[in-house]
Length: 474
Ligand SMILES: [Zn+2]
Image (cartoon, rainbow, N blue to C red):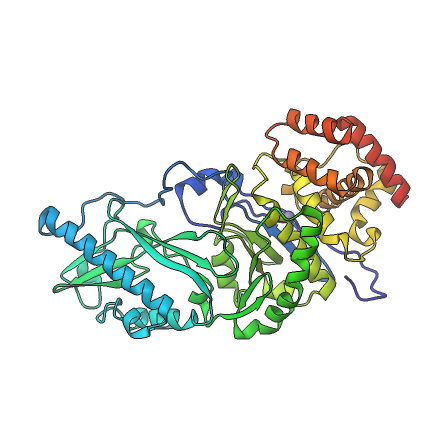
C-alpha cells in the first residue's frame, strides 16, 4: 500500500456524499437520506476517498417523474388539436426508433438524419461526436421511450438559430445496457427538444430544457471517444487520456470480482462495469454534480435498486483518475474490491442498515487478500486504543458523516469489528450475518440477528471485540 520505508500512516479524509448520483428525479431528491456516502480509504500519500452512491431503497411505484418546472403546461406551438398531437407523437416515436437503431447498427447517416439540420452547428457537431464516441461500446440495448403525457413548456421558437414551425418537449427516457455487464437495462431521462420543419420532426437540442428542470443525462460517450477494455467478467470504459489506468483496472477486474465472490458467494451478477472518467466534469456527471468528487478514488453507483426483487440497474464502479492513478496496484485492488463488494451486496442491503456493517464488510473484503498488515489499515484505531482503551460503542451512522480522523476511526473500527466477527464465526456465518443485518430496519432487528447468528447481544459483541482489539494491537 505504501512504499517500503514510508512511515506515514494511511490517511483518510472526509466524505460528504449524501446526494444522488443518478437522475434528478423527485423520488431521488426526496430520498436524499437514502443515498449513502461511505467508504473512505486513503492509500499512499494521496487523499483517497471511496464512496458508494446508491439508489433509493426501492423503486417508487410507477414511473418516477423528474422534477420539472412547467410540466404539464400547454405547448407554445401545438396547432391542429388531438389528431395533430397524435400524429406528432407517432412521428417522434418513429424518429427515436430510427435513431436508436442507427446507433445500434452503426449507421451514422441515419443517426444524423434524426438531428435538426438547422439546429446550432455546435449541437450537430456534438451529436456526430456522440455517435462516434460510442463506436467501441458494446450495447445490448439502446432505445428511447417517449411519454407524451409528461411534456414541459418548450422555449419560444424565436430563440432557436432558425425558428422552426413547431417545438415540442415530451419526456424521453433512454434505456441502455452494456453488453456483458448489465443483466437488466438502466434508464435515464434525456432533455430532448424536438422541432418540426414542414412535415418533418427532428431533435433540435438537448440543453434547451435545463431551465425547466429537464436535463439530459450524460454518459462517458458525451465526454469523448470511449475506449473499452473487455475482461472475462466485465468491461472497463475510459478514454485515450487515461488509458493506462483503464488497462490497470482491467487487469485487476476479474480477480477482484473473484475475490469478492469468494467471500460473498455466487448469488450476484458477477459482472462489473468500471468507468474511468477523463475529466473532473465527467466524474461529476457520472457521480453527481452536487457531490464533492475531489479526493475520492472510486465511487460505486447504481441508478435504481429494488431490494425486494434484487434488481440493481446500472451498477458501475467509477474511478477518479486523478486520485486512483497514483495508487499502487495493491491499493487500487483494495479500492476495487471494496466497491465491488458494495455492488455485490447492494440488492440485499436496505437503506436503514447500519453502516458499521456495510462499510466494515466492504473494507474486510477489500483488505482481506491484500497482505496489508492490520496496523497499517487501522492506525487511528490503534492510537485511540492505546490512549483510551477499547471502544464502548460501535460506530454510529452519524460517525460516517464526520470528517478527518474521526471518520477514519469509524471506518477502521468497522473494519476491525467485521474482521473480529469473521474470526469468531467464520466467513460463511459472517455472510449470513451480513444478510440479516443489512436487511435490518431497526436496532432491534440488528440485535436479534446478532443473537441468532453470533450468539451474543450488542453489549457482549462490544466487549469481545474490545478484548480482541487489545489482543491484536496492544
Ligand atoms: Zn464503502
